[in-house]
Image (tube, rainbow, N blue to C red):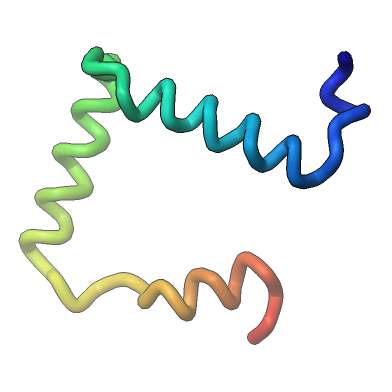
Length: 67
């Protein structure tokens, strides 16, 4: 059976089962050195100025275009 033939409910159940299989896996996702450096840079930037940035509602509004 092709995924396009599944009902919405069946697709949701499949997605949940896939997510559970990933979440229950004890292995970790390894980051590249570049990813680690970027995360370190962002953490440092946040530590310096915790008030800088946007709230979740502001970000969400920008994404979906409800400004």
